Length: 464
Image (cartoon, rainbow, N blue to C red; front, side, top):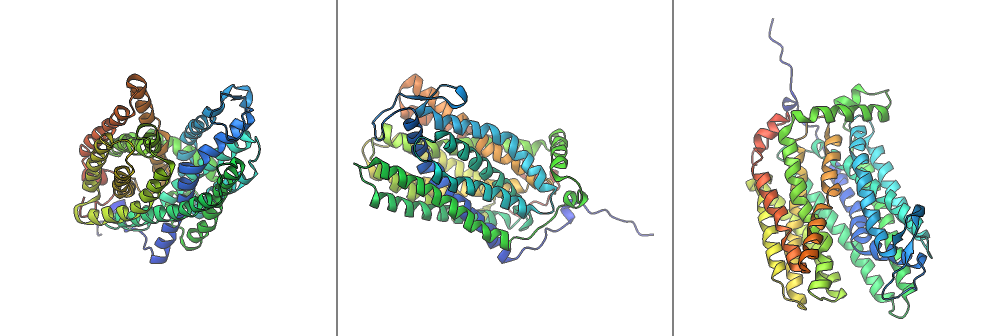
């Protein structure tokens, strides 16, 4: 009798995907990026802070406000309400995202999960149209729903990536998706900024507030409408765990599976080591993105128009940057390309420290450099991580990945804030972020990436 050989995960080729299906996957990056750019990056913070100041008894258009609000009986300064909401949403996503990933892995209908999370988030964003007057509590609740749903949908969306191509294809797939996301998010942001510039008046702050509100609503509509494309074109690729769990309670089974994964994850120490490296260097990236506007206004004394042009420049150049670094990854490998991107990020920080004040052009040139390196470093980190996930656990592991992406973004701002408090210098605070890129580079360099991929039961790409 001939010996029977039990196939391993490395022997099983990935399901074939069509160009239509991949295009559908790219379309969700195009859809959800409007929320990140128009809502989070530009409009929601000032809008919700103004609404909160009205609730605190301040006049609309006042230069400063020392008032307080009392959500759930807690005394909160009006200017602190939005940052506290961000911290609360980060705290909640730590619990929600891994559970969502575990449920996705055991579901036969991941597209339904994507639809549920995306339409919930988009619906909450559209409902911001009802945040008028002093309804700061409604605005805060809608933001929490939208932001948590945004993260949950990303977890499900990312879990499709390993099923869309083999090891040598994923860098290109991830880069194209990320590039289209920056293009779509930048396009809607440009349209909204044009509308605000054309129709707002300095002597009518209420009109400016209304324009910000409807810009936020437009991002929700964009998110919902373009989500229909991936829901139409993506196909279900049930995992072995999903097939085995068919007929059971996906929610309770998902919680139990998450518990098992947390106990078993120590069997993949190299995957965890990569996550640690990503946590460190991506925290530096997120902090640069978050604090760039503050650095430009407070330290470099630049006008708002300069900041707006730079934001748009970053968005559109990140499209080309993601594609360019994706092409480089095909030649030298994703791991080496991400390491190179961290060297470039280090150069960006040093250049930002040396920028002259009140000089718009150098700031815009630096923004262009950020755009070129930003999309590629994030897209290739996503595809590289897909190689380190045990087969059938994509959702769970991307749940942990998203926590590293968003749930730890307080480390960089904390370091920046502490250094500024000690030195009263935004420049020195910015330089403190170098530690995240240097340590992240060294940690990533120490990951034996090929051995880590094999240890996860996957086939390494030809070039790493």
